[in-house]
Amino acid sequence: MFIICSRPRFIALALASTLLLLYIYYDAKFKHADGTVKNDAELRATVNREELAASTVTAADVVKPASFDQRNETFNCKTVTLEDMTFPICHYTAEYDDTVSGLLLQGTYFEADEVKRFLRLLRLDRQLQLVDIGANIGLYSLPAARLANVLAVEPNRHTMARLAKAVDLGKISSNITLIHNAVSNVRATFNMGVYPTNQGNTFLINATKCKLTPNNLPCNTLSSPIRTVFLNDLLPLMRTKAALMKVDVEGHEVSVFTNPSAGQFFDQIDVPLIYMEWTLCKRHPAEVVRRLLDFFYSRNYTVLDLKNSRLETPYLSWPDNVFFKKM
Image (cartoon, rainbow, N blue to C red; front, side):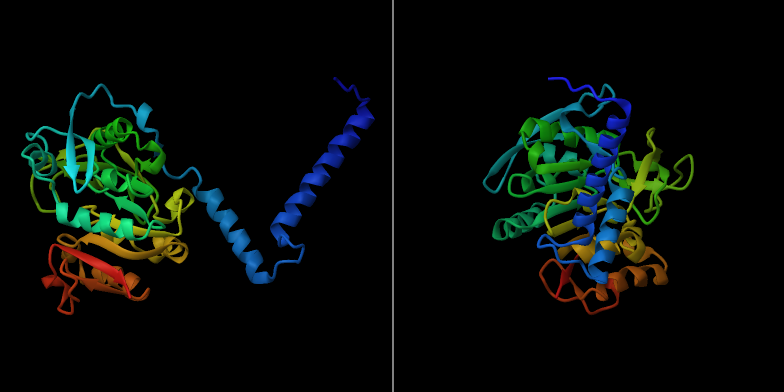
């Protein structure tokens, strides 16, 4: 049935509809479900959530695994087994990645004990999500997505192509959100460098051409620049309010965890455990490392080694990998 209105009646109907929508919006924003008016603190929280959503909803580059542009790359995938799970991982050749892929091709799962620890924790508490910053080809994310929701961040386009393919092959797209960005304390576009025989050793550079890796080794420049986002920008993509976190970003951890760029994330998400590569972090100037440590100490975290022993000694003597555990 078609309704034909005269122009004055049409205008009146449009105005009435607008007023109705405004009334509904007012009720939702300024009142509780029972009709009582929100107090000042609740109104501020509502406004802050709206501002956060408006500023971050399109900040991160979310990848659709089945349609990710692989730029005519060809690579192989193999089936691996970890604990009681069997799943595909798509890898590099040993020539281009002698560490993670090279070991995988020899039958060795890199950091298997640490991955198993995360899997045990996810099994114990099904409310936990995994946030994997510097996901590489998915050693942590791929098995974790068979137990929990996963948010995996990887800036290297070639690596993301392999991770997206493995997600698609393993039919776990519904459990994992892939983000093709780097996480930092600024929102900008950077070139990236990579160590030629270790694709996991990918890092941001402030130049058009890579000169040296953070370890002062020769490097190549990746052809595709990458956009950086805040950790706060990932909040709209979180599916739970509690998460484990793994961070391996070649020394850039000191810029991931700052109050302006990551404070909101930790205010809204309970993160009981962060696994972090410490090798390159400790090489930064003392004031930069202290800022990173203060970020966690102020939130009641302590630092443990992989045997769960508390690290009291100066941070320069801490092991290559550490846990930040909320006490």
